Length: 216
Image 1 (cartoon, rainbow, N blue to C red):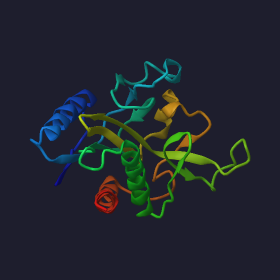
Image 2 (spheres, one colour):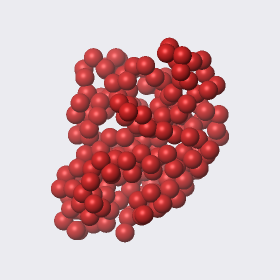
Image 3 (cartoon, rainbow, N blue to C red):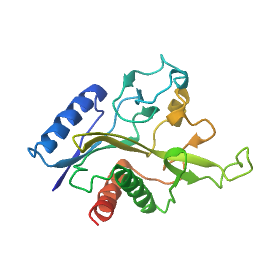
Image 4 (tube, rainbow, N blue to C red):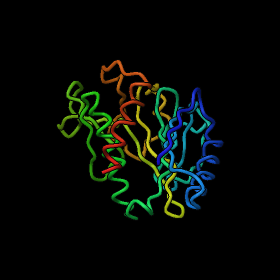
């Protein structure tokens, strides 16, 4: 049984971390069900365990939170759906790489609900979309922008942290960091792609595609 919680308004990041760690411990003890928690945060930057100080371009712009998830710097803010994923990976095969692939496929299947083709790329964390409507990249290839991020941590084989998908955040806010340490690509959102998607639409798609991705 996987419980789903959708929080209204903007969720404090430090309180979210405390909640996730507590719930993950309860899941590991068999005292609580697995959980997908859907939130939005106020504008902030988080530094994963591999974050490089030089990638924090504007350290005084928004609050910066050290995070126990893997990865580098990322931005969270209004208009971005964050899905915190507290699942028992121990009972789901104990294969961390497969679990990350499932998270990627979950995002890709969700985007497909809006006729958006997402893809993963070697050496680039997250999910990417081609931008045929934009000028070519410096190497002459079709430009690709990041639309979703992934960053997780496991403790006692239970995951916490999770994924984020850009619905309609202020994309200029990403300029205060080098997102995930990647400098040669941009960031986009569903609305930036010209799609009139609202957060509730994305939540519906997330729930539908979760069932097909994780319950195989």
